[in-house]
Image (tube, rainbow, N blue to C red; front, side):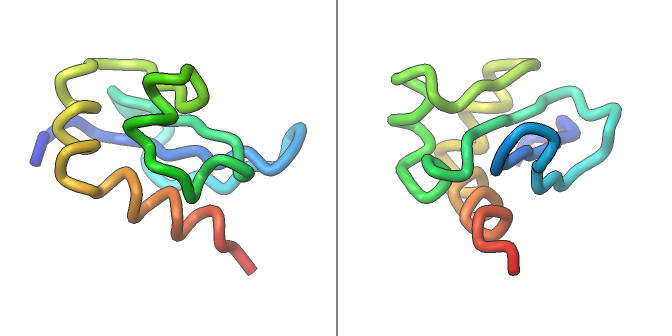
Length: 78
């Protein structure tokens, strides 16, 4: 697991996001709520999942399944 700090953002609409992670994170992962339950690796390849920061850390998180778990949790907000 990378030691890179990560912030996850699931966007529901303009100025309506579910966010987890520090504001000064080295890696920021952003996806639309409509896509959040899909495979994040495929979304990244399609350009629907955006990532700002070190790609090595992103690929490690994608492999581990952490991105899927966090995005699914944030997308299912009450």
